[in-house]
Length: 357
Ligand SMILES: Cc1cc2nc3c(=O)[nH]c(=O)nc-3n(C[C@H](O)[C@H](O)[C@H](O)COP(=O)(O)O)c2cc1C
Image (cartoon, rainbow, N blue to C red; front, side, top):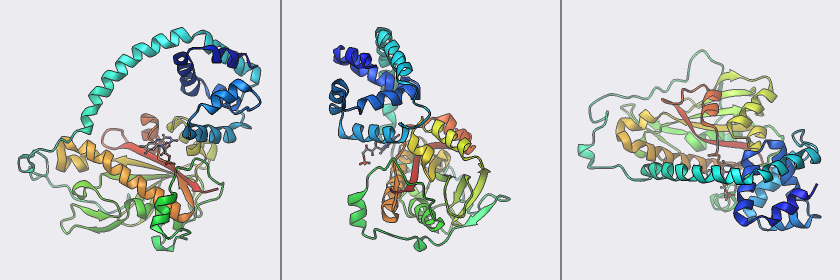
């Protein structure tokens, strides 16, 4: 059973690294979890050595995965898992070859994608945009009609357990495991207000001022919340209507297993998303921002998503909840879960939320 580890430890570092990645991301879940289990098996010296060489952050991630999966049905028998790991070990040279050719392609792609990091602002008076061309784009504050709607309680009715902003900033951290408790509607109201709450709409109905900043007050985001456990709101996909402070049910999911499975797949098998009471999916409607900033919009959108998520972290800290920012998600599965087209509206960021343990 430990043959894999003995061979693993004799490999040169590059091969160990490749194999670890292969197991972490390339193998099916059962082998991954079995491998993680072995890593934590302190009686085994080679496993312990490997464990000790991991960074604190990686250990925390492993530990959470291990805790949540040891008893899960996804763990196969040790013999079966060991056999699969040995197979990966024998094909390591092929894997490395594939890695090398992929590395060249990925580096080229990374270089192309760097462009988005640059400022695309030129003299604003000469800027060609639909706004400058006089095309009108007004806010429609009404929620989608004909769907079940819940008027949220006032955000200030939420129970605040940490009122100090300094303490919230100090204590903020990523949480990847949650209690099974349901989240009160008043807490959900506070979290939605903190991330996208509207103070006012400009008199010409073009811009809005909210709890988070946005370049040109364009606010290109929509907030979708996938509810698994919220008091008074049935499981399913809901959309936040920021101008009326309501949530609107866009798809019922009476079968929580089905919903959990979809969340798990959309988040590239991150268990904290499967088990969260609520998962925030922020989509963007790029044109809202392109209307003013044309090709410079993409950079702004990504910058702004960070403001929203940081507010979620702080609001969670204040209300006894926990969250973690998620960028590693499957684009098409996330978009199709919400029912957005992936072009005019697309997922940009995800954050599961649960009551802190
Ligand atoms: C943009 C961004 C993307 C992230 N994506 C993920 C993710 O997909 N999965 C995950 O578990 N953590 C993710 N994280 C959380 C980071 O791993 C975490 O912030 C980091 O380890 C530091 O820990 P801390 O937040 O507790 O300070 C992400 C964080 C950021 C800011």
